[in-house]
Length: 381
Length: 102
Image (cartoon, rainbow over all chains, first blue to last red):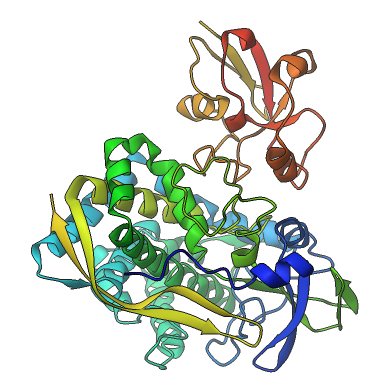
């Protein structure tokens, strides 16, 4: 049985303080825990800046990439211009043909899973699902997914211990060479033809967009998919409830996204000495916006550690908040809603054979975040 | 049946007759610019922000504490702001006019 209900590792600290002083890999970090405080800090870019290459993700990423990620690691006013360049691609998930394609792909994957004696959800279901879905978002041939699947759950920090960061940068350089020589209708071609303040994007900027396009929505989606499958294995009655009333799929999807909150937190750099909700922060040090704590704040969410598939309102901030909110949110939401729809249509029950949780072990907390391995039997209808 | 008018950021009026459901659902069904409703109406994403025309404020009623908490941090927020996913169309609101805030 999965380890449910969820254990919120920030609960006790958050009751006492809206922020705590801790460290990651030796770097001091003020973690902001309260829902209201996280939302407020996410919008204060002058005090808590994203103009910090390699420092916005925690732990820092100088060792696994060479380029600043766009538009994640820039502040206003240039942020809006960088973001606008790629926004049209991230609106594609609302198009009817895109939705239909996603339905067909996830339906096929699930049908394949149902036919097998058992399936390892992370490697054999969630990673292929995420990679194939990404070809739709970036308007690339679906065959490219075969390359991306080999990068594992997390391009930079896969459980194997091998970073695929350098391999991915080399691959992206090749993509941009091809796009410049023979532009098509894909994301990479669009970037090579884009204009920023009247000039083309530099190769470093191009690579920075590509880097987060591949790394940003990867482990997050994979972890959400495995968490959802495990949740319904432990709660067959909830899957039946959804099946009987599929109009609840959208609301249920939001609750499962809140419950998973696959990105625990994200960093901001303080340009000058300051304080974050009672924690002093030195110039050049980080704060963390802890989405995982905010989404379980009992002053906002009743019984936060329990999944309530009909939870409404549900003001979760699993996709972040403010100007840097997740560009891929519409794509991720479509994946979750489609997965729920197909599970309702195709899966009568799910049985867990074996599981290994991902555990984030840090100085201030240990957080279970999805699965390193999850073997299940999916019984078809 | 009830009618609702959305005024787009460019000033275009979109009039929907026989409107049913919440205002976010009605707006997205009619492609009202600036209303996205990404979260499906659970008061999470803030992409259905409108300003209620003054004469309708009283009948629409106050935002809940949770909704107010979202709106307090939204751009262009004022005392007439609402997330329109939280406004259910009723006969009492027949003729309501809201402006898209984003």
